[in-house]
Length: 195
Image 1: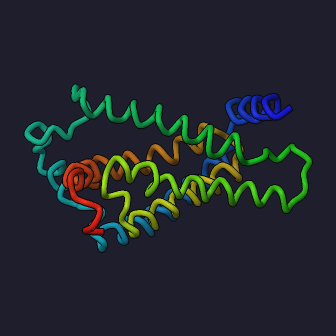
Image 2: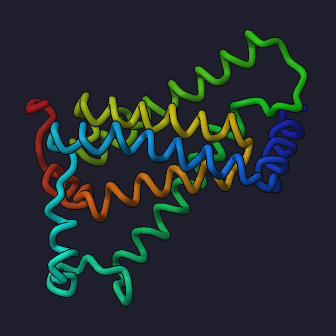
């Protein structure tokens, strides 16, 4: 019963074609998140415009930041896409009931809350084991906000692909143009007691 429900949810989420209005709303959600996260990230030191300035100054080859013929950047983006696919399936599609499922509203909202809590806790509990930057409360706040926007995207569209695109776009923007990859490298060996 549970497995068949999960497979049905996955089938629906993977085959739903988004409407034009849904795509417009996703762009609004993306703009909304960016309007909060970019100034906040810059103010808190979790993002930097220096990488973008390097791109604008056409120093892409010296810093290895260009995507064309840059295998490391392409591998990073493809690896990120695969990892986020697993996350979106496990933390959104499997947990959150679809619109067509008949269930009490209280249960539905509790599953939405569970999805948000699990996806938020992955930053300090899972990613924090890999890199000290994810243990920072400020990054945790932006991560929790990102997960909330991803849930809103999924609730509005019920589409795995639009939710995945939203999450991947934000993560890609942070990692490459806004210097997240460099920040992760800098915080790799910082001990936990500094946080």
